[in-house]
Image (tube, rainbow, N blue to C red; front, top):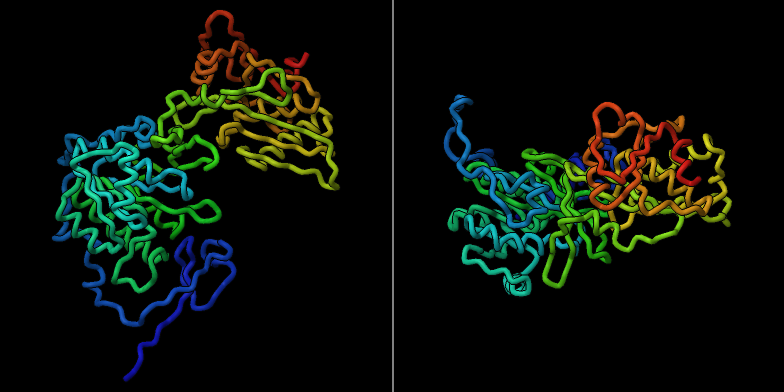
Amino acid sequence: MATTKIKSVYICSECGFQSARPMGKCPSCGAWNSMEEQEILPEAPAAPERHRGYAPDGSSRAEPFDDLTLPEYMRKKTGSAELDRVLGGGVVQGSVVLLAGEPGIGKSTLLLQICRDLGGTGKVLYVSGEESKWQLKYRAKRLEVFSPDLYVLTETNIERILEECARVSPGYLIIDSIQTVFDPRVASAPGSVSQVRESTLRVLTAAKSRGISVILVGHVNKEGGIAGPKVLEHMVDAVLYFEGDRQNTFRIIRAVKNRYGATGEIGVFEMTDKGLAEVPNPSKMLLTGRPKGISGNCAVCLIEGSRPLIAELQALTVTSVFPSPKRTVNGVDYNRAGLILAVLERRLGLRFSTLDVYLNVVGGLRIDEPASDLPLALALVSSLKDKPIGEHIIAFGEIGLAGETRPVSQIEARVKEAVRLGFTEILLPKGNIGKTPIPVPEGVTLRPVRSIYDALAIFG
């Protein structure tokens, strides 16, 4: 009796490129050490059977676009104001949302919490491939989650999941996690590139054809990206990242893709013994415990999506004992920090090349926008000269290579948030002054800054 010969191929975990031999670097996307060996059986199902379930049953017909009408309730609230903000106002009917984050960050806790409020608007089917139903019941009891419309299924076979979905007819489907689900018609192991892609495609088809709102939980790899093929992020309607240090109580949800809302929006939560609690005033939270009269400290107002957020930048400079001084940054782009150090050394003659430099953003927040250049430069100068910046001072503005400051966007929202938090002296680019009047209450001073030289006046 002839034995079935198993063929091995190497598939890139980032883009899905296939090769018959191992490679250190993927020739398609350029990722290193991403080629994973997988076994593929030579027998494949016939084309009609193979493609069954990837498209809605029945024939599709084109319809006049103007004749289409939106459902009566296109969006539905999740019960979490911070999550609704990130999603753009709530969960859209028939959408597929991917929520990714490190293990233990609180993804399952958050999803189980919103099941309580989602159950009031329709049935919720919670599919877990990692926990038993008793573990889920124990967690739900601790979180005080009780809903007669919440159904729990512990299954990893996508065929059975879709069968139960057809039987229960839920309005919401939560799968935790997509890396544990497998399609029996695909020979590779669960979590592989092929399994994740095929399983997600079948879930996507069911969501669009039946109007089910789906939330998928995704694992992340060691580089911090979503495990599985990159096409997974293109298939879904929204991609949310759950960020934060497990040793820290604060968590941040950030939207990096959203077809039904703005990207860049963030929601802030705090991990408590009763689950994740919303933080409605994150600026005040991030400034809690700010030291007074200490050098190397400056406040900055950022824009995350449509939300102004005040954070605390810290800098520390010490004499280096190494031939090559250290540059350690946390929450700030490394290349951006190097650019600011070069501008300060070249334009102001400040010697940072012989010092170890440490930069930190308090609260685990990550700053990406250029408006943090000016406060970052002030914090570095403050640490170098050991001269504190007043607690009433806040700054924001982009710095060019010549040391000049450039205008930033949404200046009124930044000033309003700074005033609300009690700052009385605001340093901002001169280019933002004069175009439109910026209303400020009595006692608040706007100080326009043309270059880094003008900003040094706050040190006397």
